[in-house]
Amino acid sequence: MLDLPFLKVWTPPSAYLLAMKAIAARFDSNDANDLRTLIAHLGLRRVDEVLEIVERYYPRNQIPPKTQFFLEELFG
Image (cartoon, rainbow, N blue to C red; front, side, top):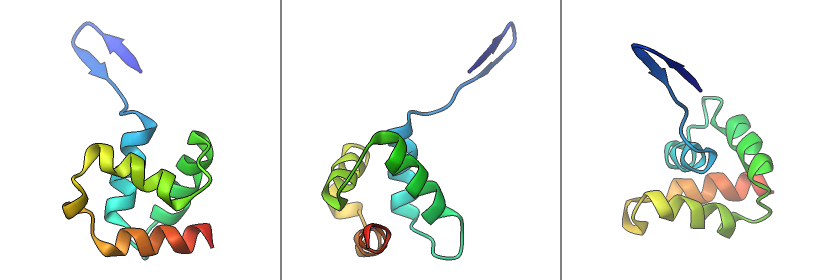
C-alpha cells in the first residue's frame, strides 16, 4: 500500500479480513457491515462459500458456532 525508505504499510488480502471478521462475529460492532462489504467484494453468494474461505485461515475445530449463525443471519 505504501513503501517508504523506513516504513512499509501493507494490507492483508480481502479473504483474510473476511475470515477474521467472521471469526469475531460481534453483534455489537461493525462486523456485519464489514462482512457484507467483503462478501460483495469477493463475489460470494452462499454461507458455505464464506466458510470455505474462513477454513483456509482457521482450522474447522477453532471456528465457533456463532460464526455460522452470524453468517446465516447475514444471508437471510
